[in-house]
Image (cartoon, rainbow, N blue to C red; front, side):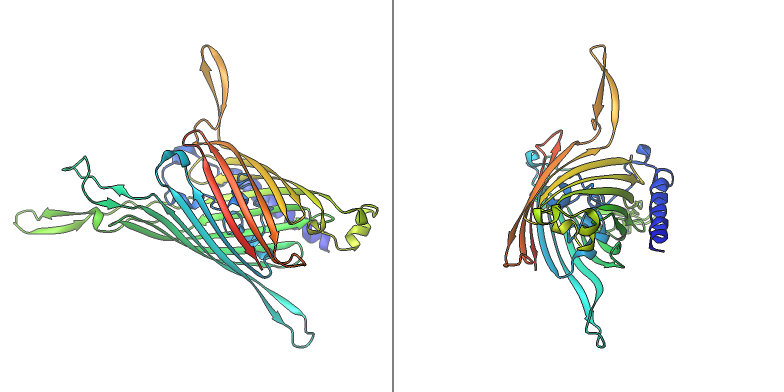
Length: 392
């Protein structure tokens, strides 16, 4: 019965994967018709380091961006903070701060005394700032003494649960805000995600995530108001101009990942069935190499692909790299055809990162993680992302 259930689930996920190519096929002609683009920027070094391709692989607090289903693997308490220097060489003062806290929920069965998993809840915060910008007007194009600071923010409330050892799901509600001094827009976005684990050591994974689904947003405020004289009178009144609504940047992401595991000498002499009977998983491996890939179907821009590779030494060190693919074009230069990849994107494609885990207890159940990632860009010397995570 379990095999039939797993087969049906895999067919359903593959069906969603096929639907991504048709129902939500990317269209470059629709670019610019959606707003709240900061919802598409990954603020976490652990996932951004391999091009955010780990929709099937991501686990823990960082999953609040990639695939909320991965939050279900947090059984206790996690706290994390991340800071991104966006386009470092632009000297624009663009920075992103992200913070989150997650807590696993349990209850005790009074009759058996066994703990019952009630899922995991989390709260996250994202703030993107552009520094202080000098204000200009039609009358004073060289600038006034005033300054303004655009802000792009959202606050997320997240919940995820493991339905069994193989199926994990979650949902997020994000309150989105874009604002300057006298104009702002507010909205709500919803994320849902599923992860399915299979294989002898739960090392084959499928992930599906629908992100940024919600109603259109509209700008409001005194900044889009004008003073006008009513026709036929001398009466001057303030009239608010209506702003055109814009859609949220909805995405459907489908991903796969596979772990190549090397266990300690104690288990290497066992065959696969004996290891499985011992209950070994990827967490028991000494060395792990994970290959991951994802397809991103964008509702308001062209579709993308991402691939990544991660090496892990127990729980103490991970090294990762990824490549983000957006477009390929052929151009003639000096009479010769040349192929260009991602030439219409600010991002070159590659990214890389690492994680160092510092144990805080003898058993290693409590750890402090230091994360770093770098994303290459065509201009402005790339993005630097640093993160700090405490797992209790």
